Length: 201
Ligand SMILES: [Mg+2]
Image: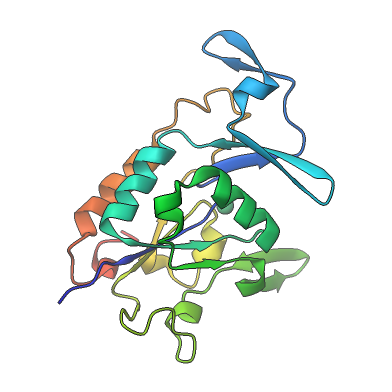
């Protein structure tokens, strides 16, 4: 019996863009859109308000992944933040099927000279003693990570699909098709024996 492969999704600038400083107005289709109509969701954490926008084709992408794969979330955000974003963006039927949510606490920090890099080492998912689902063991043949920050998957390049960082404040923010590009790549490796043979090419 073959099990669904696992797709590990980053949140910020991969699936959504959030900000504490929203634009008062933003240019959409040559018109000006007031803030409340421009963003998809808003929430508060510790007296700080966040505004968020789903990346174009978010709903199509998430639905496709949910139908064909297991979903894991790995964000470098805090748990409060990640939960708020997920609750505001994922449909309930998909939310309840998410296999795990990893946050900043599961990241490693790599310091090179004065620069700090966040690493999301998939070996943490695959390692003994950290079994996400004992009936569906995940390893480097059946796990795909999607992230806009190449440093995060520098330990796992053969399992990664990089995306362009997406921010709603960019002028062409709504003309973005990167999630559909990722969906196309993923659809071709859905049934492969080893995802590594197809990625990092
Ligand atoms: Mg990111």
